[in-house]
Image (cartoon, rainbow, N blue to C red):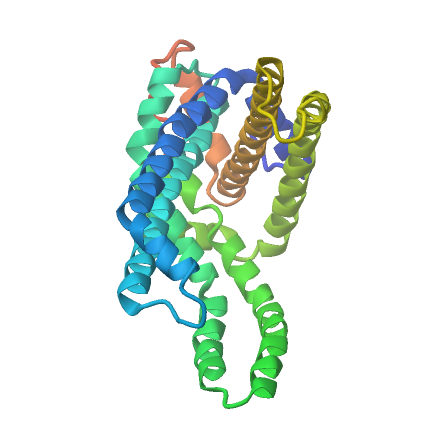
Length: 345
């Protein structure tokens, strides 16, 4: 899939495309399987929360004229909102972690030219997902720390502002403060951006993944930043191009159905069928675009990890030595590129 030498930008882009082209069925299957689990779980969490606090909605959002909502109605809604946010974030993070673990696992086998199966890669992705989730959470927490620090200072100032003019001034100051924190947040994000690949390819823990990522990026930040931005923008543009035909066809299919519904009357069976078709078409386009965007971005990150190890740790020589001693038909899911120190020069 990629040449066993330090990679240029074109090698990373073409290698990511080649990996997707060769393993798109597995990639799409795992992403769809994750969505089939994550989306119903999220819907269940929201449904249970709404059912639990349903009686408090009307007193809070439609109180009697001139009266403020009572505390006994506000508190349950706030608690439910916090619990739902935490649960949705956790479920979404775990789902994203399975996908983030899948791409380096695919690349690990593709670099060695070994066959892959959905079952083996799904098992590997699920097994490494908790460690990847930890690495993603810690890297996001560290990269977001400048923004969190600003908000920790800014919010008390807003709450303690004694005048409307003071609040307005602080509101106008917030975008400038966030803009000032952005360079540091981006620097930290790139510094720890290879942690997921480290966790999967080396079997490392979250903290070790962060440390290894920082060590691999050190001294080469600008090149990795440039390659990452190109890959992200390219993935976004192609994902949008994939979704666009589905959205256009869905919109054109929906418009006649909506126009054919008489005002004040129920839609006909044909109109309902057209609306359902349009909705499913838009949903399909969104899923296809998301699969490509996530897969391409994660593969590019894994490619950068392999590139840095070939540049700094002699990974190419270790891989060539392993290829020379490994039979062509290796069991899927077997060990991929050696971890740091395993045969590196």
